[in-house]
Length: 324
Image (cartoon, rainbow, N blue to C red):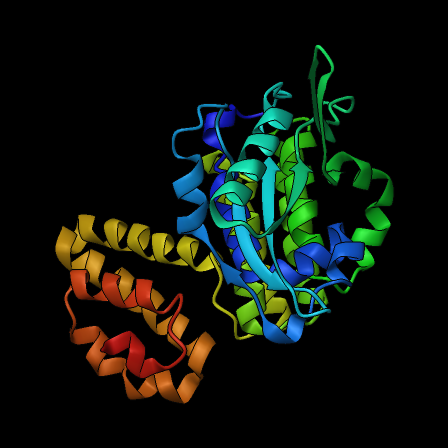
């Protein structure tokens, strides 16, 4: 596997928890999900968490989140989520769970429910409590914990689940358990293809694609092959979505421009290549009429402006947003 430092698991987990917190609980902690009054929503308390843990030197934290929810009986509860994605089991995990728990309660005097998510690859690492005792004084702290490796035996359940957080779990598992880069690449494409096969709307595909792309990193050569496959998938399904595959399209346009630049001048060749790929992206996303309407504007723009427009089209909903 790639070195741990090459994989940024922290950021995608933070984003997934913030955007899909109800789905996270529904999939991994269904009994707790059932106790929450979701009509009242949830509030993320990042500042409150930072204030109580900033001086706790108990190992590196990964995507710890603090969320305020309301129970069905109307009472307020704070849900503390610890996501442990280290390659090796961490001995201080249970102690850290306890320290953060009592610090939050001591400072805010609210009900705190601590939940652990273990995404490491050590099957025997399953801390579910912190215990201490001496001379008759004893402390026992228990917390619910989920081991993602247990979902390997429930893979079909993940693949057929209508809960979008199942995709996050699958991506994390394949990022951690794949034997080599080729296997990671195969699984990365399979997971992306699953998004299209499920018929998700464009915004959700972009959201989940970003998380998959973030979790499953590939060497440059395999990344290019993966993006080419996604590009062909989009064309075959005739879906007007612009995903990370367009990064390859933009890069391809630059390369075409550089080749033309050898004969026509570097700057002119780069401009022509970027203009050609931008017009193609506009046609795929907004239609042939839109591409024809802005063709002259694109052809007259300089290479730097074309690059800005090409980057904007990845997230723009309208053509006006591209040219703003």
